[in-house]
Amino acid sequence: MQKTYEVRGMHCVSCSTGIKKLVKRLPSVDQVDVELSNSKIHVTFNTDQPQDQAVIDAVKRLGYQAK
Image 1 (cartoon, one colour):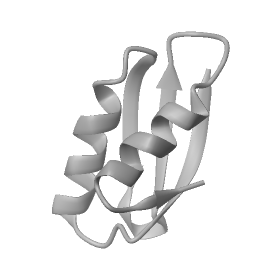
Image 2: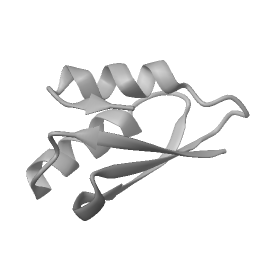
Image 3: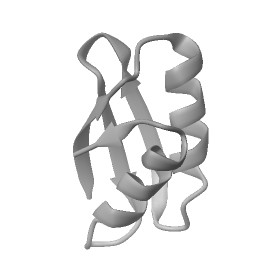
Image 4: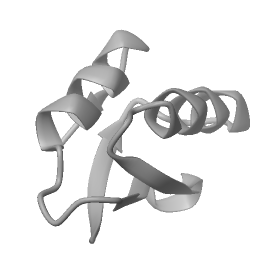
């Protein structure tokens, strides 16, 4: 299952790299693709249920907001 999240505050390659690495570490995540120009991340989960709160919390730990 894939889900897209808007990320506020992500404005450079360093930001997107940090978000990608941290979200990819979540056990329910298979893949993370970042659209820096649109401030979005596309997360592919290895379960049928997206783990929204886990993704939101991971992004928040880096100082950004995801919805």
